Amino acid sequence: MVSSPKRGPRGALKNAVRAYLESLNGEPATIAEITEATKGEVGERPSSSYRATLQDERYFERVSRGVFRIKQG
Figure (cartoon, rainbow, N blue to C red):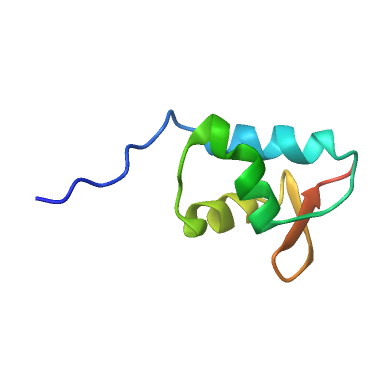
């Protein structure tokens, strides 16, 4: 039996990504940069989890392919 990666508390990834992007003061970051910056807080997560999290247009804005920033205003 193969164990799947342990999931963190609900919303932990989104909160970590929001905090990181807010710390950039509106500057964009790649998914790779976001992953690296939040790994210490949320552990290893599949890239699909980050992509799904970043689709939340209430908080995140796509700048270009694979590049996001915190939604302004």
